[in-house]
Amino acid sequence: MRIELATQPGDSLRPNEDFVSVALPASGHGGALVLLDGVTPPPDGGTGCMHGVPWFTARLGGALLELAVSRPDMTLSDCLSAAISRTADAHRDGCDLSHRRTPQATVVLARWDATTVEHLVLSDSVLLIEALDGTVRAVLDDRIARLAAVGPVTDRLRNAEGGFFTAAADPAVAGRAVTGATPRTDVRALGALSDGAARWVEVFRAGGWRECLSVLAKEGPEALIERVREAELADPDGRSFRRGKPHDDAAALYAEL
Image 1 (cartoon, helix red, strand yellow):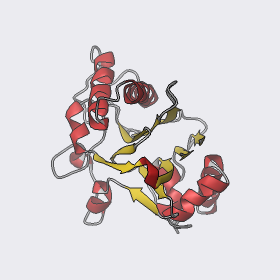
Image 2 (cartoon, helix red, strand yellow; image 1 turned 90 degrees about the vertical axis):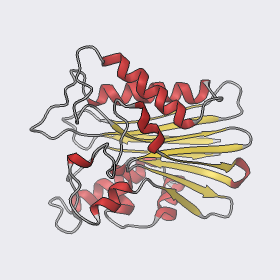
Image 3 (cartoon, rainbow, N blue to C red; image 1 turned 180 degrees about the vertical axis):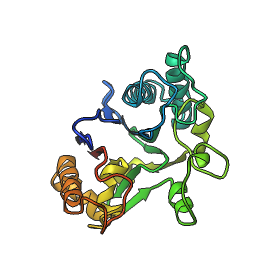
Image 4 (tube, helix red, strand yellow; image 1 turned 30 degrees about the horizontal axis):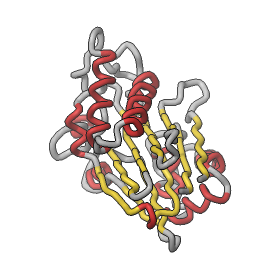
């Protein structure tokens, strides 16, 4: 088994709001990976929270990883629901968890054992699943993309019926995630990308998902992020490739099972 991961802030003067980690239980029969992309609040607005997004992603990511490996009896949706509840309880006193911009994050979660690879994706981060024949399937929660195709994606659509969903303070949102399972014998490798790393495909169109996973496998996650940074620097004003920020936090993970 080979596992590599990397993350970089989009701005060296701001804390990185992404989280990426992996756990391999002592049993040696499986593992789990977690990747979160914290949602950056607008510069002119607050979150109702005294802690901030990096604190939230570290708390949620740590809880999610622990539950995924220690509670194989729980589904990944149940793990996410419990992790959201645990994190909310950690800052319920003194923070306004009903604030629309309360700290929140996208989620990629995968867990494998000797027989099955399970997955969960919520919002616009990406999980890549490579089959033994080299084909690559991208697991996407495409709600934001579908909304953007017909009009502006505004805050009123966040965690609202008919809109898109992120992991914030409501554990019920776990039921909105894209989930599934694949036989372990059908999976060669996994890749996980925050949208800052997925820009290589989705924004800069430098290659498809299969080519993206090939970069992860041959050069590593750090190299993929560096390719994104080069593309961002080549188009600093976003004139050729429109995007919300010139640079974004980026996280990527490659797991060869």
